[in-house]
Image 1: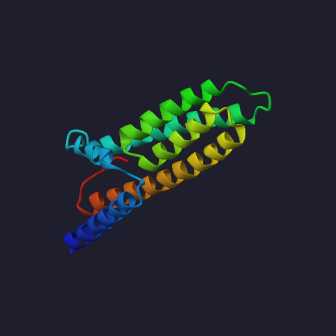
Image 2: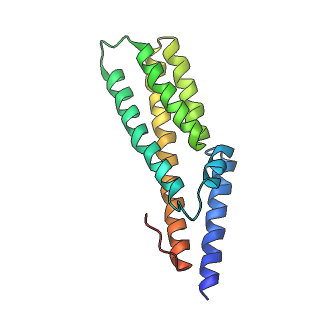
Length: 154
């Protein structure tokens, strides 16, 4: 009976991941990240993704503060923050976040304030969607491991 629960949860995990790849939310870099996880570092993916979320929150907050300043004119600073966000999103396989950051960066290169405000809105939307999906994925993974009798410190 224990195996059926584990199998069902693994199938749920696989369906969620398939959906995220199909939607373009994740790319093959996420699979490479998963391959780095093993018995000696069972929370590796969880830890890396959480670092990404912590750092991304800071970058998004900085971008919002910059754009809320009516006197703002340093679009290069926006570009630097976006370069960081593009790089870290690429490293975890967050394809859609990376893609919308590139579009946002184009608006910043044109010193296009309305385009930047819209770009920030889209990036925040994609970021929160990714964060919610990763939260769901990690909950399923934790349930699967608990059902298999493995203690998983998340």
